[in-house]
Length: 96
View 1 (tube, rainbow, N blue to C red):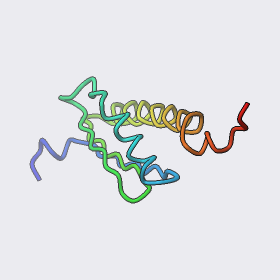
View 2 (spheres, one colour):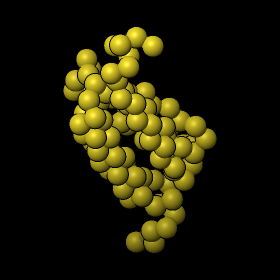
View 3 (cartoon, one colour):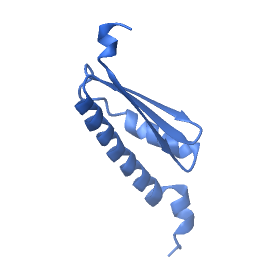
């Protein structure tokens, strides 16, 4: 491993969803926003079964913390949106 790659910090986060479709929706919603510091943060998003898997490589531990925190805030927003407007929400709400 070169000195340049040894200085990167890697964090992988696995977020379980109710279905693979929901995980894919989350991935598509989140990946449209580019990282603000692409020279210092690399992000890879993938869907594995019902999980959204995010791998971050950052130059500093502080950037890893900030990046993962921002990612989790985005996941929270997607989950709340799916709960409110997703197909399951339509079935659970009584029609007026």
